[in-house]
Amino acid sequence: MTIETQSQRGERSPLRRILSSVFAILQTRLELVGIELAEEKDRLLGVLFLGLAAMMLATMALIALTALIAIAFWDTYRLQALAGITVVYAIAGLACALKARSSLRNAPMVFEATIAEFEKDREVFRKP
Picture 1 (cartoon, rainbow, N blue to C red):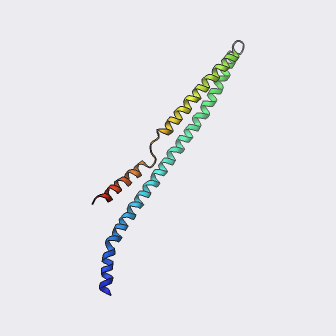
Picture 2 (picture 1 turned 120 degrees about the horizontal axis):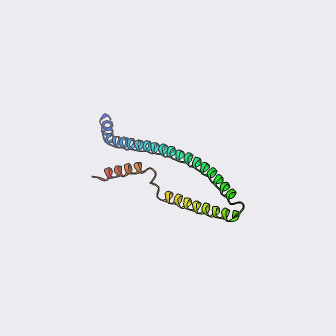
């Protein structure tokens, strides 16, 4: 029985080492995914905060500009001035929406480094 047990252990030993290596690779890749996810979260929160601050400040500036123009042209061309401001705001809003859509479409792939590492792993396992 000891000879059979030793031979079975000998047969399983390379398999266990391979499985151990595969699990170690998977653990490393999952840690990389976690790091990339945390970095992406931090980046998105920073962009969100700055975007909201910019929107708030820009809104206050536009309100002040609208009031200034409306007061300046109140006696002569108040309706035309307000219509002109509305058209400018609409065009600016459309330009921002198109730029945002373009940025979303051209955004880099999430988890790019992790995918590259998985590709390297796949190539290593394909080699004879």
